[in-house]
Image (cartoon, rainbow, N blue to C red; front, side, top):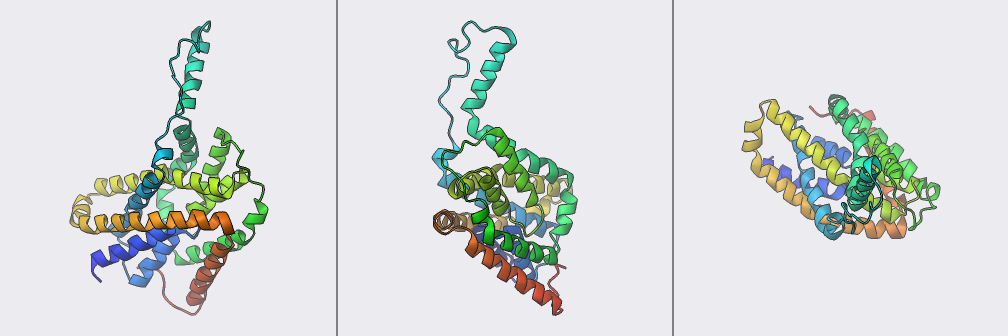
Length: 294
């Protein structure tokens, strides 16, 4: 099959599933199997690099909210009037964090996944090749999502996202390192566990995806360069561009749909979808179909 056509198909899958709680990585692995694409170093990198297109969709849709600073003059003489020494610089520090509060919370939430992702990168790559793991986690996650609306039904629009809450959401994100879990699902559930509403939890999940996916994309590109894969990237640049553009356009539509749908109806439909897809794959594996990536 033509590489550019594969890029279009994978881009559509990435854009549709990255921000839905259905596991984009799991669907990418399944798609790769269905297309019969061999799991080369480039293919592994490609499935991560095209996430960049999905990242841009979040930035574009939430431009005004993403590029925002709280109104605060950091080095305000009036604010430190009568204060000297360490206390003065502590005040400046607090005012700095307040001004960049949005980005500070994203950084705090990003740290757990950044550390664990760096430490266990090779192990994660190994799990990415297991369709069985993806299928099992799709089913388990689906069953959980049938009940998560009732379990976390006390979200409030008045809930303030503190550093501790942001860090806890970041810990939930680490669960998504297991293929089939869904980064979106993990972080949204993490947000709801911190008493955020479904809508607020979903939007923070989108925002957190930007540094997380950007770091993952950058790391894969750097690793490929260091392993002598510069020529591979250059030779396949058209496919990378096509995949990112398609993922960007489709993700724009998917995000708008998801926010509207989940606010009105919750997560049960996504739970049933995960169970059906995961269950079908498990049945096929039990019947002897070879779905493993070569």
